[in-house]
Length: 333
Image 1 (cartoon, helix red, strand yellow):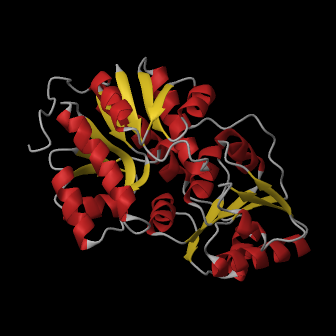
Image 2: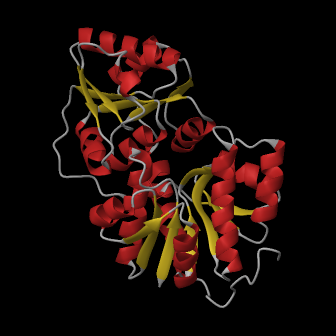
Image 3: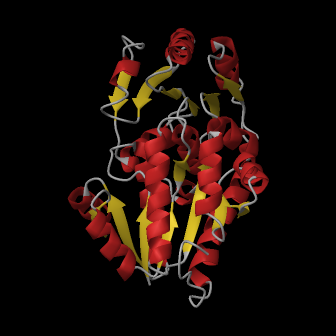
């Protein structure tokens, strides 16, 4: 079966690339063929061994959706209009195009929102009759309040297998994010205090072209700017503890079995940490809190994390084993 994938792919964002790698891994393991809508199709094809088309080329997308047997929209946080209403309209348009082609659509292991009232109305219309898998409980409740058909899944990156790396017992990885100066100052203070306590602190920025300014808060520290999910995963698996502003800093730490704490700039970060029963603070946060988490090696609920992995795997089984005779003839249905 050919499965079209719509997401924020090909933009050199480590979190979204980790999602793509995990989804491709799971589809191939089940004998299916991924077809990716990407900003950079040639690079996506080379990195993941898949077919890809230009995500903003209407004719290429139309043809790809015609060839596909179904569309998975996600993962990520695609259905929101906080950063851009144009982004929301793009992803809803891809869904409408797939439905016009008569293809089943699943909103797949996403977070939902924030949405303006106008955005909520658009999502209700576009997703009528579409099955949603939400990656956190807050999004699940939101989707159900909007009257959508939703169930709880989990972030697909949880299914990545940790690399064979020896954990460094005194290494702490801190993951900043550009655009949140107060939170980055909190991380910088955390870094300084941990260094004074004898820890090896590594700063890991996960989106080249965006996060360079965040690294300016950490002069004198070992820093790395990487978008390749394999490299990011390696560093997080090597660390003894992770403190992250970015969502996939905490998600990939969880997948690697590394204890973590979140500094939440967005409800999706707090939502994941709550579901994992992991420590977190809302931005700007306090350095003393995160130093204590590291010093006391405060753990998430690893049982809850295993449940997330099971839900993520089960969501693939659900969408790939369902009947293919329920194709939706039109977006008007």
